[in-house]
Image (cartoon, rainbow, N blue to C red; front, side):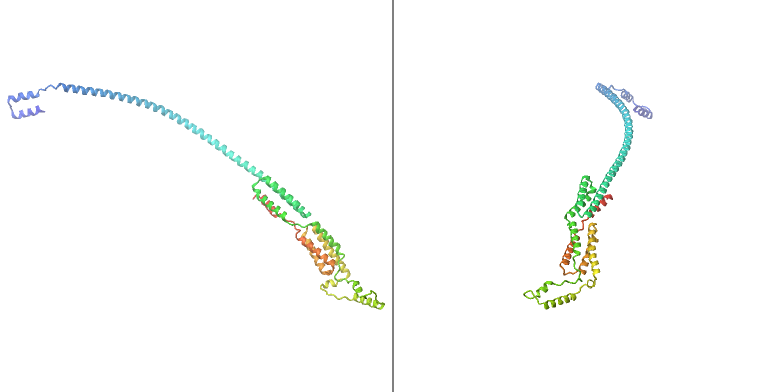
Length: 356
């Protein structure tokens, strides 16, 4: 670049001094570089060569490591694919097994439900048979108690039923057990009249009916009164005795009394006989009703007999009063003759039989 500018300058000036040409030639000749510069450049080149070799070695190691890692990754990928295939196959097998197990489980659940239904049906049928047996036994015992007039058959049936319910140990029969226990306590605490004693009293009334005095019967002459009217020595003259006899006959023909029941006063002897027999028939009907456990009919017959006794018979007579007292005792005992019922137990049996 300097030579070109010099040439251009020469071309423009035309000629220059001879000294200038020498200087230019000397300036154009290169000077040799120093030795240390060459050594420095050689050292730098050697260091660069060594660095390049080291870098190349490192690069080769990295490539080998990458190749190994790539091979490992490839083998792991193959293994992973194999394991994935195995896992998929295992998942399919597991899903198939789960499906089979679910099917079997549903079948087992269905069988279990059917078995439970069968067991409940068997248990229910057993409980129903137990309830039917207990109900029939209690009703039969109730009929026996009504026929015999004793509560012992009913108590025995209730105790047997309670034991059977306890042995069954069914929760649905617990209300029945409580009802039976309450009925047993009520029957034990109930006061029941003596039926044989009532029958004996009715027989006494029937036998006493023949000795009752009808209200319109003529009273006999009071001999004690006539003896009291005798003298202190106990003897009367003939005309006094004759007069006394006439007076006694006159008194027997005429009687003054208070009539409270006109029907009794107007009875004829034949009607008095039928009244007495009707009274006896009422007592016998009451006795038969008591034996047949028809208590309402027996009470009605006793009430009719009591009304007939007070209406047609002499209430001042001692035998009539004794019959009336005995009849009142029978009527009072008839009120407590009703046997206690077991309606609570029968209601609980009906509820248990309905399955509630």
